Image (cartoon, rainbow, N blue to C red; front, side, top):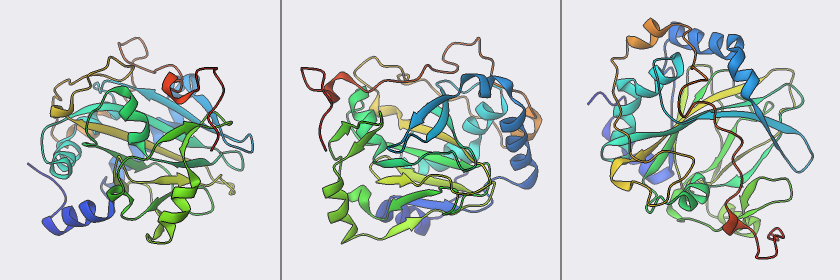
Length: 284
């Protein structure tokens, strides 16, 4: 195992629900990922919008299975997979990857939520899941970097409801109470930095108030033993074919093939259990 984290960093992740690793990708690897985000026409073609309460949008694109593209190679690299297996304490598989794109002055906010608030409804019984957010651009308070409540992974899953904007979020009364006990952290990052965060960690982001874009690549993983018991738009356990880290540079600007199975998912909809029987949205 080639986890980049030591035992004290693992303990920090367990306690706080997140950890930032600076310069996880070297300059050449980071440049390749950045170039791919600018040059891959299929990424731009398959982006869909997620509106916030003000009508501003964050653009997203998601896919299930990691291939031999630059994105899939990163998701299958030993340093990524081994670190995630260190954090989740067992074999993991790739649950999905996605790009989130906040354009200058237009990128919208994300409401407070937990990823497990979504993935629980996909049939994942235990919260043995985590994400790795890779900064493709500089992430700052001004352009809407991720915010987390440190230690909120200890709260457990909070019920989520469908909001008027179409996003799915948690009861803000619980968030305000949690803020009395937990520190709010702005996860500012440089390109090539990575944020690992647990699926129960409460997080959100502000709109992009800057003239700089804020794009990130997220690779999400599930423990192999936590195989979903419900068929869903994300995959069941599929073994990862790990790649040596030097394969990232060898992949170069090879893009995801839109014709392959599991590539570029359609915009997901909220699960039916987040709506009332009459079809009305839940109230906060």
